Length: 112
Image 1 (cartoon, one colour):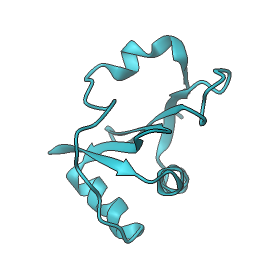
Image 2: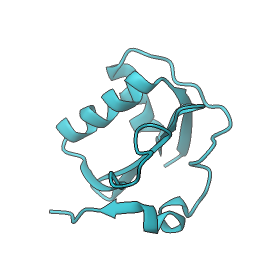
Image 3: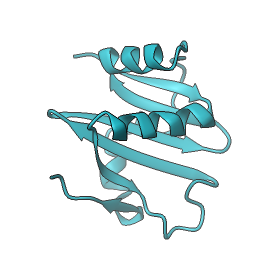
Image 4: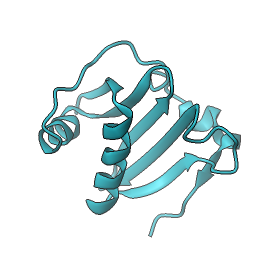
């Protein structure tokens, strides 16, 4: 499974993808804690899991959103939203341990 990172995802689409994943039975397992003053203003981060697969999403107000997932999942998202995804240089999701590195700033949710 090839993993890719889509970049420059417009803010409106970024948050629509999050809603889409929630409705598509993806489980939100981690997110940037809402108690942090800049959540959704300067930065945001989400991890969803389903069937032993994960999708990471990061956003900031300068570079817009990034989505890290398998090529197949990214193609499904692009088709659902009728858009062409860009694959530039990511600001955040190229970090292999971003979830672990940001652990103090994240809120983790139990899987059902």
